[in-house]
Length: 302
Ligand code: 0X9
Ligand code: ZN
Image (cartoon, rainbow, N blue to C red; front, side, top):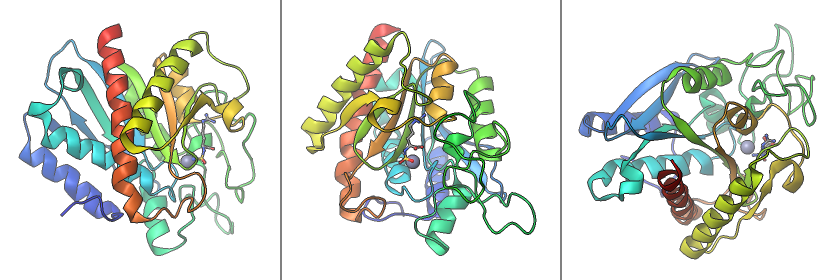
């Protein structure tokens, strides 16, 4: 049974998604959009009232294996919307929601049974190589190979051999490209630091509409703060963090998905990646308040 008092193994998360699809077939569906390097399913859950005029939002988590609060937060959103859809606001109901809570299932499982602080996927670059893993957030196809990436397979920011060399990033991008949904927002959950980051990440420049992203980001941060007490900083990722190319957010933005954000969840460094389970509920609840602000903006704007 699912809960938000523990971190869960992949099997539990997938069992939960399948359960929701079975229980709420009128609004929830689950599909595998491909397989990971080691052959695990990449499961996307869709929540929709079926209206053909709906805009769509894509939300993912677990690009980085060790950032356990991310899949926990994304599954919290899924639970909230699926279990309470009939009493949800029209802002939520009139959007098609797509959730991929674990983009990197091989890495996620490895953090449970091997190395708790593993970040990348589990690709073995070539036989006999001691180092494994590609950083999925350096493998997307917009400005791939630029600043903040490495060509060394031993590096934690190894970019892979080419853009979308990894089955996980390829499946995600193919799905968004070919789904037919009208995506107007892309949210990718990471940890840690409490930041709401918008493009560009590849270098210290901003897109022409960055003022819109900044304004909506600030309103999301206000909602998170008043709901949970956690304070988030808002800004472009290259400026607030560091330049890093090949990120999923930059790729989504370059595709024309207006509201593309990377959310760095709690904390600010005391526990870092190894965030105690008592944080899951407050962190996820705060983040959900941020998503509601975005949903409202999308309904107003489009
Ligand atoms: O470095 C990253 O991939 C992200 N931070 S993390 O600590 N979770 O690894 C930030 C990514 C920001 N977006 C881009 N640089 N495109
Ligand atoms: Zn991350």
